[in-house]
Figure 1 (tube, rainbow, N blue to C red):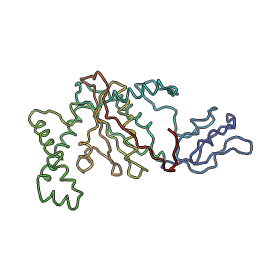
Figure 2 (figure 1 turned 90 degrees about the horizontal axis):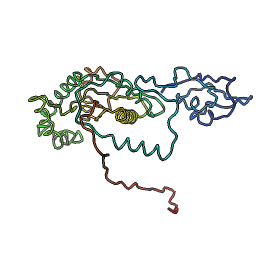
Figure 3 (figure 1 turned 90 degrees about the vertical axis):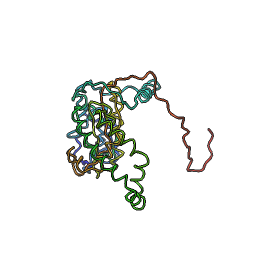
Figure 4 (figure 1 turned 30 degrees about the horizontal axis):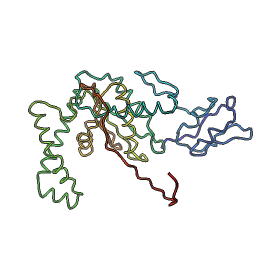
Length: 309
């Protein structure tokens, strides 16, 4: 957790409105005898709510900027006002975004990939630890090298999964992970590797030009959730930028189980990769949004009290 013991409050600007104290999750801000806000010196987790809510601009926190430092997008201090039109636009963007498996060959500029990583940091994280990290593979050649390492891993895994004694051992002592892979994925992986070997057809990254790996420190409050929330922001922003994207689960699993791949990617020992995002300019544009099965949410009234409607 990031800690702070010095929140600076400019008494010449503070108007004593008390909004900073009202939004502070740790309760480290309170009005002094003069009615102006004071920081009591205790640690906080740098959520930045106090600075953001202050109407007078009286609060500053060392190392906190008011913008992300994007290079390809003009940042705005305030987003659009909430309302039906904003909801409609947001939902339309979410429905428009779908996994891309047909890419044009041109590269994605590195500056765009870096901006996407910065945008990922706008996601929430447990206790605001912001324990994520982003590794960019900026060129097609980098993906091909990474793909070759993944292919090597899955060749070994296919050999293991072909052994009945090892599958039995896995069922008895390993939660049947090897058996599930054998039943659900081994044949399709064999076919994908055959295409890779025969004609260089890329069925892992589907011809994407680049990738972003989203990782998180294991000592974060909820590293998997933090990384995937950042990933969702990257996916939606990539769509808004005109990029196609696809989560590559096979690559994530290869990283998780292969020390050689981790070493090649220069991943710190305290981090785990939770998402591999393939990115590129899509070769196909869809004419309508993706359909989804209807969902009926469960409504649970724990109080056991009947309410109308």
